[in-house]
Image 1 (cartoon, rainbow, N blue to C red):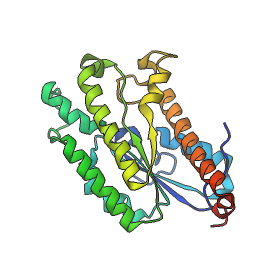
Image 2 (spheres, rainbow, N blue to C red):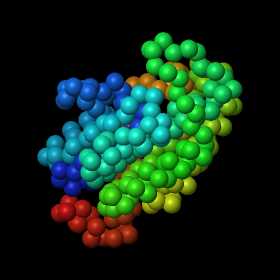
Image 3 (cartoon, one colour):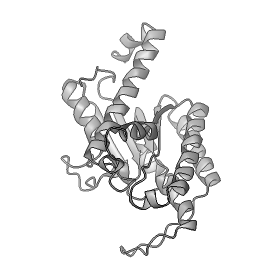
Length: 249
């Protein structure tokens, strides 16, 4: 797949979220590993290889285990201060887990860190809304993409599937509503993985029900690029001069 050139020269694209975005990214300035082993790296690889002269900067600010409340604590330094031109957010599965674990307690932690606190459904919605409002006010020209969380019935997720599915579905619904409210674009990954599971077992795509395999990250990257390209094409169809403006901005 070759992607069309859709970003003006030198633009900055920021991905923020939890471990699905993090992918063990380097924190030491190692440019070979600072995008992590996730869909973020695959997007950057595909677009950079197709358009090496465009000088697009891809930044990964995913952190393992983070929820919307954790993102809020670092929003200034890891989002607003970076002044991205496009922001892609993927968060929600750890927030859902904090509710599920009220009914299905998680095993004791072995990393010495304290148990995570509860993020209620209302906390999730209000906090996410607050971050988007702040971001729109601070960076009014920013293009924002909201990605919905996803799971498949594998391992512990499969054992308590109804609980997990309910909580993740509710957060995806909230994200759809927030995207509409704040004029953000929406990428829904759950339907993507549901369709993929008709071609291979769920564990092929998401071995533990939460964290995608290499193939899982690949279809996420493909879907992200497809959606972003189609949105630009849609805008250009309704405004024939916008594509020309895009590449001369």
